[in-house]
Length: 94
Image (cartoon, rainbow, N blue to C red; front, side, top):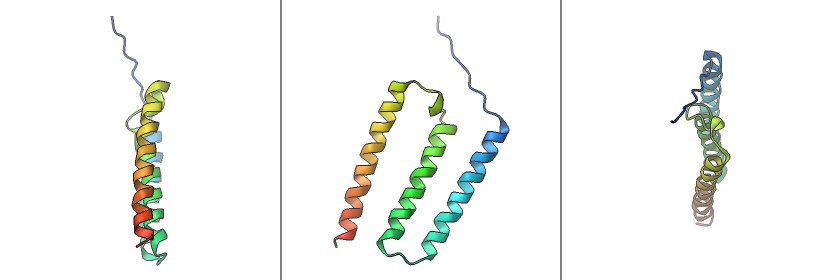
């Protein structure tokens, strides 16, 4: 017999997530107006990663999952960071 646990998040939490995502989007747009050369792309990717973390933890309910599943997601994120670092290193040394 399989029992499922349902995680109900309040509307207030969704509202805070919406406000955070909108604020981070505004920051991303503002950063693109400022000329920081190669750092512009790095900062935009960092902000996008923070937004992805917010979506993963809240809308995909990662904060309610087991530790093993979190480790797997962490490994995928580590590979993502490596790919971004390799891309940025290629961009910086052109």
